[in-house]
Length: 193
Image (cartoon, rainbow, N blue to C red):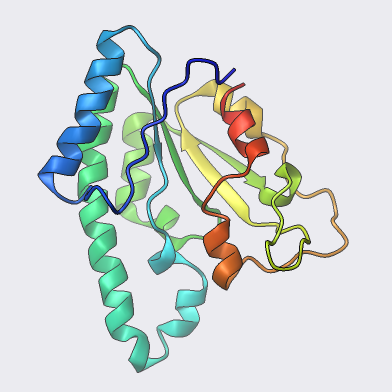
């Protein structure tokens, strides 16, 4: 149940690439853990640079600068995330990492090392099974997701939630992809099982 759940969102408004942003997150983990509360650190870092569309964009020289910016941001956020993950583990927090299933970042050596270091399990699910719909068309969006976690409850809650054969899906691109960043109520409910 989400009763009593405290959510601290860290967005671009609080720069997670700087020491102040990292200290803010670590401070929350320490404060909540010392109060005896269960702490879950949920990572949902930008995946734009690892999106399958970038395979096409890489062929366009005009996109090179944008892709370089995505990569630079990813590297900075990754470094911060690793600091926080070590602190989370020290204070007994559980870890969940979310990216779309097709994100190429999942295959990077540093991610594979991270999964192994923290003993994270992978669970795959499709957004349409949790009621994800396009704001533009109202039709289901499949959006295959992957979660990496050390929390068995999360694995159990999301296991088996792949598309059962929706007759049509709206592609999860453009503004629909952006809208899917805000998890719908069914997905949030699963996290609180």
